[in-house]
Length: 211
Length: 211
Image (cartoon, rainbow over all chains, first blue to last red; front, side, top):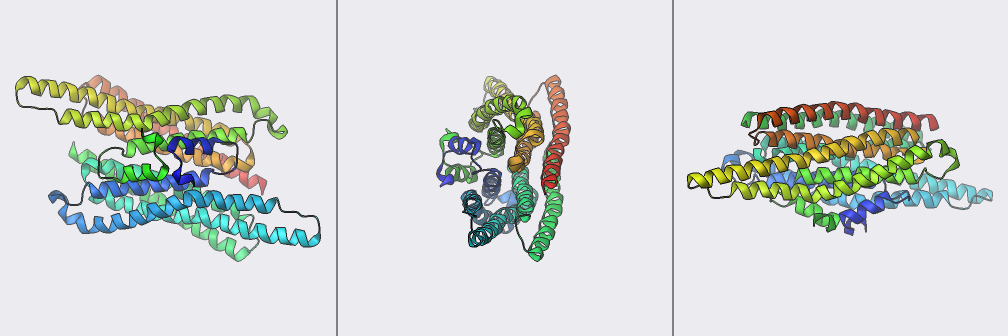
């Protein structure tokens, strides 16, 4: 499992001249790091008298961030597996007509799965950007910059996930599914960019006010 | 050393309610992942007849990306150490006048060091965004989306680094140094945003052309 590798070994595996792990796996990791930072800021805030009014909201944020960290760490491996399945399908024999049909069906199935994986990363990261806005507003001001970094890390998972969905869409033969996915990722992208800027603006304003 | 931790253990350390590792360390890791992806795309391109004209340029990019990956992995640990030194200085005794002076001097030194660390991350990531533009233009089209993800990951290291420099600037008593650093990070930020969008536009146009 990739998540059992050390940071330096994972980076070396990423750098290796093999298609996986690649950007999709790294994007999921970026999202997991975002979730971890949000948990940290919540825990540096919860239980402090000065932030008592935010405690309940931050407990809810923390619970969601913990779930998303787990999901995104799973996606670090799942993304690589999904792409490996696409490559395995490409390498199936395509001599006879029945082999060609079997290969085409396997490739379509594998491509749909390989599209769902970055979409899951993008969805999780979209949720994290929303949580980062909450943490930027409510979290301990001494750690609020980490909510800003969390928003940036989640944006990587979102935008890279959306890019990989778009690339894989070409391999899917079903037009309705393609149109639905296209529209869904477009909405995710627009919304996420707005919330990311919102999180960063709040961080900058709160740090400025402390000066 | 943090870089010897597994991905899941590092994420857990990041999530722990201690100031370090925090966003600065995660931002350096994001940069290291960017560098690793650029090396991968170079190696999936170099030696292929179709991309022969880009081989020399990509060999140079690859050498720089490898150096930057090493530097950024070192910064994953150095960022945490630098911040720990600030906290140690804050905790120094401040009873007598000479203790106060010693604490103030130690805090100023530690803060300068803690500012140089995210600045080093930001500088390395600014270089990576430039390399991502080159790789987006010259790399194997089948892997070009990874150059896009690399640009996004490097942007986290840059923008988070710049944010942390700005926060730490307040702790530095030397006005000339503060003004110089402020101007430097502002220029880095503007330039990086332009180049990131350039890399993503090239990726999108090359993938579209392949359709």
